[in-house]
Length: 66
Image (tube, rainbow, N blue to C red; front, side, top):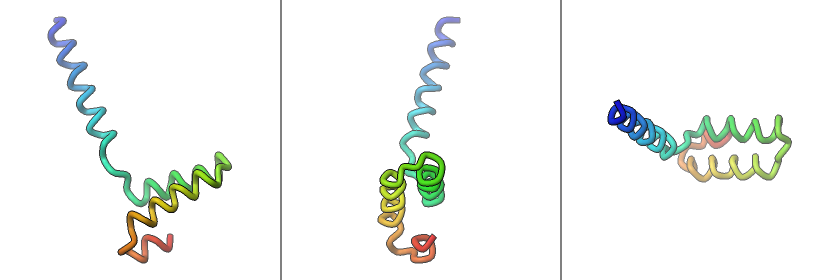
């Protein structure tokens, strides 16, 4: 029983760390920036997220203009 519990916890840790390592998409960064700007009121934080989004997508002008 204890072995199954430990195995389950290890599996949960691996899954949690793997999902935390994936890169953020353009839409995720945009949504976070909008939230920071409109809800939190942190314009500097929102600007950093927008800048990161633009830097990530320099080749796609349609995404950058959003």
